[in-house]
Length: 83
Image (cartoon, rainbow, N blue to C red; front, side, top):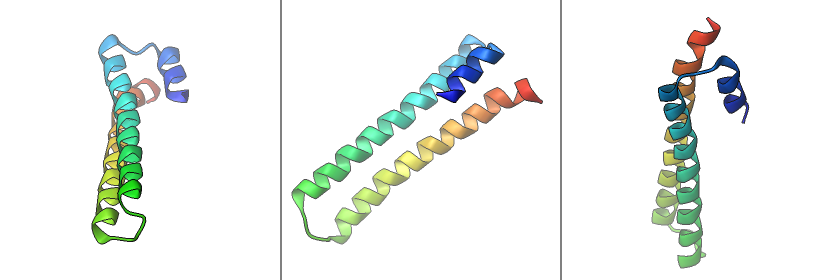
């Protein structure tokens, strides 16, 4: 939320807005998919299984990578306005 206010404050371009919005929605989408995978795995098996753990870990890694993309994109776009 703070990033959106900062973007309004520094008046970023339309193309920069597209990257910011894409980054935000990418994180939200991967978080939703991660939750769906975790719930599905829990529904299929209540017992511990190594493949279930791998599925959950890979889904969590997707969220991590999308979050890293969002941070990097935000830094590339916003740092020039402050330096």
